Amino acid sequence: MDAITLDLAPFIQMTDDQFFELCQHHRDYRFERNAAGALIIMSPAGGETSRRNLSIAGQLYQWNQRCKLGIAFDSSGGFKLPNGADRSPDASWLTLERWQALTLAERQKFLPLCPDFVVELRSPSDSLTKLQEKMQEYMASGARLGWLIDPQGQQVEIYRLGQLPEVLISPAVLLGEDVLSDFELDLSDIL
Image 1 (tube, helix red, strand yellow):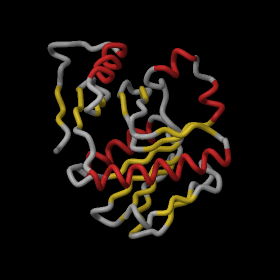
Image 2: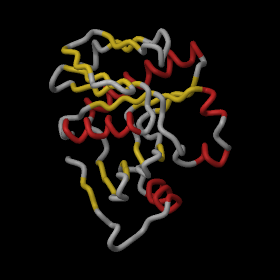
Image 3: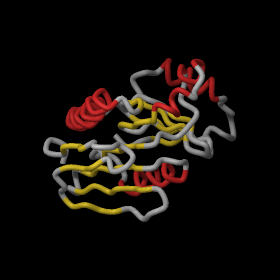
């Protein structure tokens, strides 16, 4: 199912706390908000996409447990970006220093920042153009490294701060570069 975008601004001005409560009350759906405040409603992932997401998040988690350089998040983690959008990447990571700078109250809700690293995995119903726009939004919000993984196209777009995206066709692994030191994502069961 394609994501549904509802522009509620003419009728309702939802506060950050109200949006958070909406997400908590309807856990069977994934909600995001764009910078203009429109509500984006996504259905739960299908089996194949869920399996791939778990592989990505699991590998990121295992690496992070070994190096202890930051905090890893799965697809249910929400972030309040500087432009006002509320986004939930499929996997993400934040340096320990930035995590520790957050208050306990900030950690309990959608984190008021952009992750240092983000991954978006394209599902069969996702628009590639919309995901590319989302990746650009992350980069404009301060992400240092991002991967847009497209199993349908058998490719990965690598986003780096201040650079044009690099496209890799059927890579076997992705490297965390200087953001995720020594991290290698094995793509054998993802692409």
